[in-house]
Image (cartoon, rainbow, N blue to C red; front, side, top):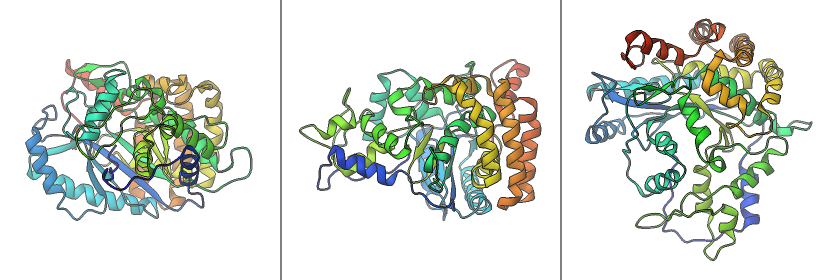
Length: 431
């Protein structure tokens, strides 16, 4: 959601339906040997003295102004509810990515501490209702649009946070999946990642009944915006058609509020009296929130933000190992293939498998079995992709604490809530 928005005042040159299809078809997957890795980390920001306290907007503004003066390698952006996001530069290796982002996080945390603030790695704010920090035309329009289908959109905008892993699309391969093998694997493995790293079981001080409340929000939101395209055909064609058929969220304007149309697909817009231009297409692409978004590379968007200062390293390392090591990727492919039958023909995240992952985490027996196999394959692959002993130990500790026991980080929060006799005692979530 932090994608930049281009100026609306430039000269407009309309694009046709055929041009849109060709443009999207050409840019959605950049194939070749996987060389780069990236991660986007979203964090909730809270008062250092108590994670339950919302931060007044003026204090957030001052703190973020100070952060923008830091010499970071990662891009620093702010989400609508004031969540902080760090997006790494493309890295040539896992350890380069971890090293760069860790250094940036250390600087960010030090600056926030001076302002009396801290970060929390939670997939969903467990205490506070949605409250928008950014008041800009694009977010005003987004809120109006999402409000039409329920409250989940506001919660997604303002109270959710994630670990998003970015991977190269990979080789074009022979066979029915072609260059879509990694694309297919990302969607089928996605349910395992949701379950293993679920970390958002509460909202507004109450248990929600989900291990990943964040994922439940995506499940409940508008299907045309958050679903995946069909996975049984050519990925380029499927994604191009999905972009054309998806509803237009808003129409940019040089001044004043942005228009929020109703029932207008991008395909229909190209045939209207005031058709879109290339910048409108670029913006439309940023308003689609599938579980895996093709942006030249693959952006895996289904993982909840993780606890602790370095909890984000585990999903990054496990995902990188399962995709970029050939042996681990083959094991993961064979492991999740039977799960595809359970998922059925419904697009993620609305199929039964993803719903079970979000609701039950690794308490689901099939997902637990798949996670055990995938984490074992990742552990074997980590030395081959250059992971340090510290990273390997972190993955092993997570595996022992959660995966081997059929648990996920959300279970710790639920245990804490039960033992404390109230929603949260603040333990183990402040970073």
